[in-house]
Length: 421
Ligand SMILES: *Cc1c(COP(=O)(O)O)cnc(C)c1O
Image (cartoon, rainbow, N blue to C red; front, side, top):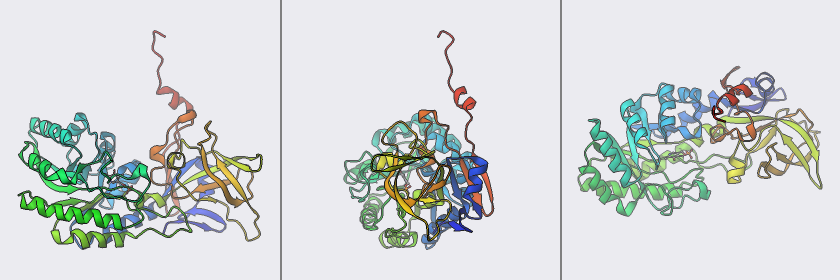
């Protein structure tokens, strides 16, 4: 459920008509709903209310400071994958004690930054990384909590670009090798083993792979404890999928996911961490765009809109689908026709949908790409020198620009021409 609905014939974000945002902020623009964000976060809290837990929002899904502040104020921890994300989480007021640091390529500088600023735990992805972290922590006189990310070799049955739990993926340490790595970790200075970490992929629409992976983690936890490690925390990753099509079978609910966690690892008496991103923010956002031209092509009509692949990359990158809806609610007597919805960028890949049925449209009409709150704005670029897409946050009948569209002057001022040129 989200808070984007038609009211008096206009698509609204909570109490705010999207047409008003388009008028005041311009298009393209991302629009997020605080009520939806809060609701989705609450569902994960509820799903784990049977145990000690921390829901760590995956910052990479949407890293706007206002979104992070909202999450942090609700009690969320943060899962970060870079020094930049760490800085964002801290700037949004989240204490280091609620931040976990994931990612396969943490640099020494990022490790130092997080140790200095405070960190709940590092999720270790390889032996070289573990040794470097040990060296750095010891040199700083610190003892940092770590979990080791194990790769359970489970097929998450999702898009290959976002599957991370198979042995051929770059993530984590093979589960068969993990005992050896934990043994080494226990001996290294500067590190304190606290848990086991796993994340098998994103946009999972079936609980089966979770069940398989978490059962392996439970077994491994028993083995590691028998080896003498104090495993008190399990970080079970993120990845629960969302419905991208209104008419589709909905993926499992957080409460059902929570039950799988309880069934598989509930008996271990560990504190549970999860790292949902997409499920919290995906359907809490839309990308609002305006039709520039309706172009009649050969055998097809193109809807050329002012949003492009640089603003919303998922369709070009993963062939992803986003429902497109008109901002003005179609009446029962509206005529529909198929459109190829495309952006202005000079690449054929800048196509959002082909042959999608929409009400007959004209220049200036507004549309919204649904389910665009996750992996939308964060992946945006200024390709074709299109200004970075702005973001708006709605709460009830108020809204605020939480990232402004840069002016050309601001864009150009980031470059410099050397004096010898
Ligand atoms: C991407 C990622 C997540 C979040 O995945 P979602 O599908 O957005 O829930 C969580 N943990 C790690 C380690 C990730 O890489």
